[in-house]
Amino acid sequence: MSNYPQLSLLIGGHAVSSGRETIDVLDPATGEAIAALPRATADDLDTALANAQAGFATWRTTGADEREAVLRKAAGLIRERSKDIGAAITREQGKPHKEAIGEVIYCAMLLEFYAGECKRLYGKTLVRPDGQRVEVRHEPVGPVAGFSAWNFPALNVMRKIGGPLAAGCSVIVKPSEETPAGGLAMVQAMLDAGVPGDVCQAVFGVPAEISEHLMGSPVIRKITFTGSTAVGKQLAKLAAENLQRATLELGGHGPVLVFNDADIDKALDTMAAAKFRNAGQVCVSPTRFLVEEDVFERFRDGFVERAKAVKVGNGMDTDTQMGPMASERGPDGIQKKIADAREHGAKLLAGGERIGNQGFFHQPTVLSEVPTDAAIMNDEPFGPVAIINPMSGYDAMVGEANRLPYGLAAYAWTQDAKRKMRLASEIEAGMIALNGGTVSAADAPFGGVKWSGYGLEDGADGVAACLVSKTVHESA
Ligand code: NAD
Image (cartoon, rainbow, N blue to C red; front, side):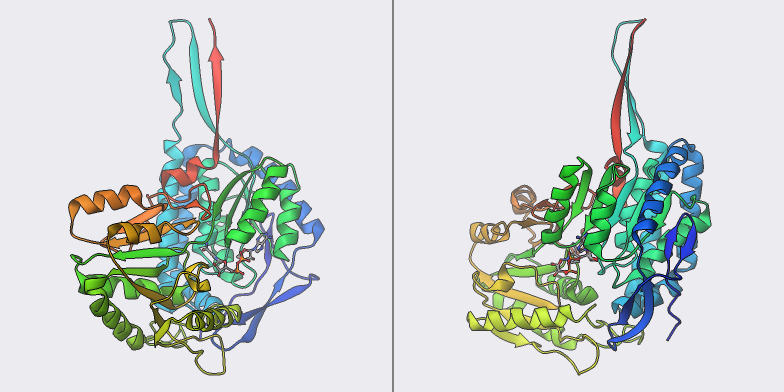
């Protein structure tokens, strides 16, 4: 088992830890503490805010070439360090090491894309008679505060810092206290590559206290959050008080529409892998499988077979396909939702239990014929549970897909070209995969609609979200 790194706050380019209260970080495979994470004091937060203000003044005027070069260098460092960063992620979060390395490499890809965007922050000149000029400039919004969740310790943080830094903003990020090392490694790579210490900083503490403190300051001009809809709504209210812009990447409840003309074997292989990736703790996880009646039994049985075959174990074991859930809340919450679904008449076809008495392991689980009034049909499962229901016809399937207030990712399997076009326009989601399992790419916008939040990350939109426009009217 690899060493877990020393943890600290990163304020003004300095690792700060001594004399601070600490929070234990647990290994979800054992439930045991593996490190002590320092908590920022109010003074630490004020120092970080003052730094962010000073850092913004210099970074916003740093040339695009230089910003691009520094961000590309950081991406290179992240690639070089991917195996070790991946091991730290596995230890604090549980996902298989291979999956964790993939997460880290995706961070590098995203940062490489963002680096290129530094030179594509074009303004425009409006048509006017000779002697007059109207110029629209895009400028960085100002210091950004980012708050991220534990399910992707590195990627969630990269999404919080990459766009702002490319746009010319300074950023203070609070990675999850449960999984700090992955995010700290992203910030450290930025610093090692030459991002000034007052431009990219990391703090930890009691989440609500940190966000209230940072967002209460006029220094912060934008916030960006990944986590639950409940917390997203609280932060949106706080942001409104200071009229801070907000990007909110919140929960989902991904519908998967499987029509009778679909390539069922491909759908099964793709969607079962997507379902159990990161033990289902993924905001774009496929959750509600809505399967046309005439292919329902074949799909259900194939899915159950694949769920039973998933190898669950410590993420550092090379043959592990699914690790433990990230915290005690995971299996506890799933157990309650499974019990509630069964009370409502759902059939349990695979799994359903916690595994062992050590760590936070849970069996890959399949429920079928789950009524819409069961909690799991309405609240994001955020765990290794697939719900497979028979449905009859396009309208019922799309109606169920759009029934919930969430709209993050959706998946559909069909060969019919006209139906694909209708699905693309009629499903209420930020991202739709047709005949596939991928809904994100470094150059593609990522974000939801309805209660899944607003604002975008990734792609050119992830940088544009950190810019404001200024119009300069010049007369002769
Ligand atoms: P949560 O929203 O309470 O916490 C998510 C992250 O937000 C944590 O890392 C936490 O430190 C941070 N956070 C919490 N309160 C905060 C605050 N007031 N200010 C700033 N940061 C704050 O979610 P949870 O309890 O960890 O999980 C509950 C549910 O949230 C999950 O079951 C899932 O539905 C959803 N969730 C979604 C995502 C996602 O990727 N969109 C990630 C994690 C959790």
